[in-house]
Length: 92
Image (cartoon, rainbow, N blue to C red; front, side, top):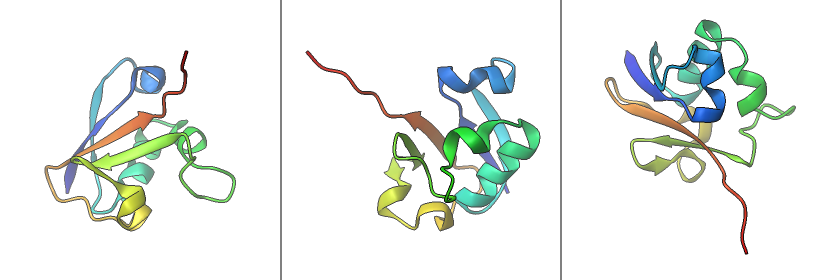
């Protein structure tokens, strides 16, 4: 199943500047594995040493944060969009 992955600016060096890429997968884990296979370097930036999603990386399927769903086992419907969004910190 084809899924669109939105790539944040900070990771576009891994996709030759592309802001979106198409990969196959039916779960978040499968999509991210396919992304790594096509564009090596994502795994180390998205996952921690224990295999979990880094706490400063947010993954959304459509508008839903996968942390509040089934994590990497969250279903990604065909034609849906998965967004990788790095957490932003700062303040005054």
